[in-house]
Length: 303
Length: 303
Image (tube, rainbow over all chains, first blue to last red; front, side, top):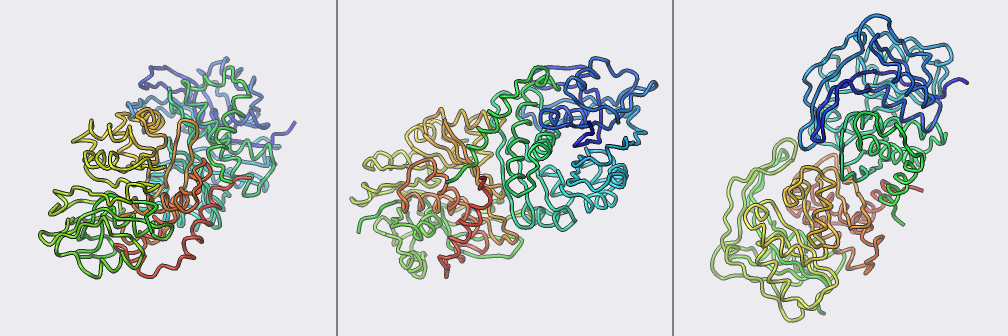
């Protein structure tokens, strides 16, 4: 069966500390979070690279979720990308203690032939040159979405803008939206980002939720109120996986379809942060997704 | 005609600088913003104090809006509360350059007899002891709402908590919500504030919008996207005036009625910040209120 959606991004081991505890070499990376979450909605292929230290149990974890690994490059040499960081009491921005790119440094995404016809493409937070390369490789997908981060805004702004101009949806967080737009206020920043080319932007605002805007419309979804966060790592990619997964599953590309997908994004982000790493997906009851979706829907319903 | 709603709060002259320009001794104060805005929705009485320098044209401005001034104490001695401050490029928190309480220092709110039977009471951001006094004076209104600020959280936390415990609705901004709850994260802060006694809280989040929560429900409204802010002073009190005004006008105290009122609050906040001081209300076309309301409604509608 060919895949309906692909994600290109990082595969990582994260050593992290949060106010709730410590984990060494926990499974992580944007493509891993995205594909695991999206697997609850659609047939998804992961394009990424890992080293010889990548554990068989983690391959099994992805396979058990039905994630297609035809584009997963498991190297016989070198180590998997490793990130070490910690979160303070407010679970805000992480402090990075160590970053070892390892095999990820020379990551050169290759798409299996059928991946080029995927209907939806998610470009995780990787170098904009690689994002541009993937954009060239795919064959007119219905949706190309791109995520990025402050590093690329600061170091490769021009390339990033070239990539942003070619996608349908830009995922970005609040501070980065202001940075990329070079604006100090939110409304003008949103306006400017939409002028850069994407049809739609999705601004992630952490515990406040997320906003989506087109030139005609905008819509806010609150974060599901998690009273007990354990590990915020991967919240954004999980939002992306839920959002894009919902689009893939429902095939509804109307404004209302995008709004519904915002709720699924928020639902999945909330599920991810309740446990370390991807532990929430070790034995997730799919009913929980619908429960969260319905709870969020109640929060945005006005008669 | 007796008033349906009363507001108790400050009457001020503001000397301020924003990236858009400067104003000296512009009309301001929480009770002035609130009552002017609310006058587009209902019959509102202003309880406040001003000094001998308070201009006749400003009395006329309030009267022309139909604001009832039976509880407005215009002193023959002393000066009106004067605040001087400036906003930076991001129109974020103001920097205070000078505060002269003047006649406001000994403000002792007195309620005309019929004010005690007002259906809705808004306690603007004044000393919690005065808020408590007004709560004792009124005769079972349907809604008592209270606004506060970091000053009272820091200096009179216990009195403030006593007042908060006795009201139906607590208005508070995002940072102050964390401060008052002594929490670092939003969701636990909301939970704790609701345990303090109010049936509902409304958290103002500036350019991101506002959230309302009860123990059972929560709802977000985005800020109307103003591309051209002139002066953020009074945005919160204008939100309050629109919210409470809408409740007063529609008499709908269901969850849906409160949600609709959140949209009116956001609409009025957006109108206020487009011009200095209360200039937006010198010749406001009431159709603009409905236009903003409808635009905001489109931003929160999900089929």
